[in-house]
Length: 256
Image (cartoon, rainbow, N blue to C red; front, side, top):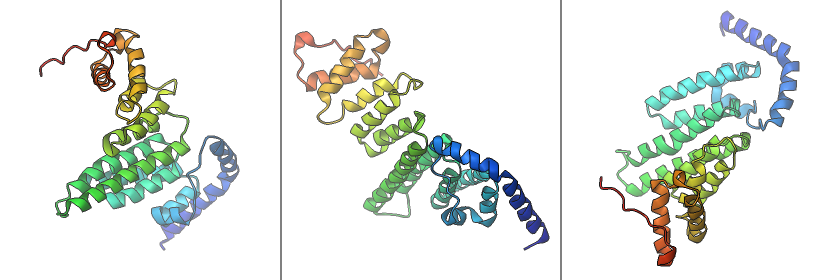
């Protein structure tokens, strides 16, 4: 070990010792704010290396996380998905209250890596490509579920999870559930209250519930009568055999 490295380590350790009283107080605040993920244990040391671990131990969590995040972006450009996940695991462990880290990690795994796995030219068997694709879906789901555990007070990760269930798992029941949980936040965009019913319309056994909810929205006025709402309202009217005199007139879609 070089003299310069020894000095750097000593500086970090001294700085960490000075910060200890402040860190103890911050830890109490972090726990009160759902700060569950940043565990400076041996598993984290294996992910970020000796110098990174010492830096995190000395109070430089945010700095180490940012460096690893930049490195993960480089790995994304190289499509090195496994190595990228290692960085994401470390980043989200170091900064579990950063919603962006959880969201982007899930996006890269659930969307980008899953597409690459299905289109892998080195794997001729479709069944194995589908299996690999689904495993990446699950990794995306795992990031979002753990992200929600650490950030239950913001709507963004609920919305991301709903989108993952909708677009990738094709699980419309779960998508409806998480869009509903998203819409429950007062600061969430207003369109999520419609999204939950679009998905509920595709959840077996909930067609009537979805129809009544969409009909209620329709009756609120022109601002709610958007093309997708009209489409599902029309589909459900036919599926539920709504009497002709009770049907809402749905104008035909314009020619493309």
